Image (cartoon, rainbow, N blue to C red; front, side, top):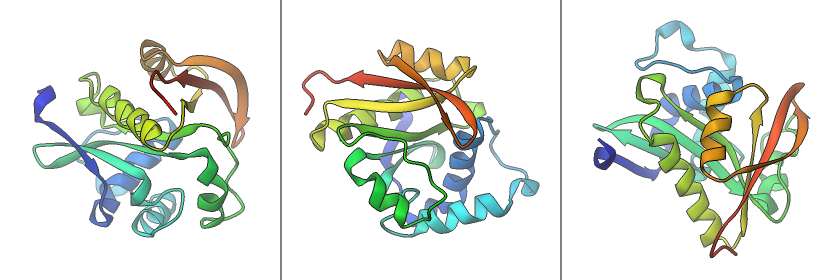
Length: 184
């Protein structure tokens, strides 16, 4: 199974499925695939529009997807901390600043529930870490909602260390950081 998973850069035509996965990551809910029609809402539609555009936080340009049997089953959205202000400005002032200048930031990681616990999230996280190295960042950071034990376990197993508690978008998070070997 592991070998049949392909990781690739996202494309604008992945917008529909990617928007649902991003929404899943941001709302801390797991979705099954295929999606029921009633899942569409204004937030998902906005994510689809941002995803198709260049140069913003939610753009396909910042996303890698995991495919299994030609179906997108997961994604990771990540970018350099030096770029966050520019990426956020392209979306609007409602976005909170989440990263530090000297780190690669994992903004969203999601895998459909049907395919969870198969190593897909770990592989996507490794892609983000490789991007950090390629862009000369020596650490990767992310925020995990407090109480999200499956995500906390994944990141802890991958050597991310909780550094502080924080509040973003009126939710409580644990900020986790990993120092990369051979980074920067």
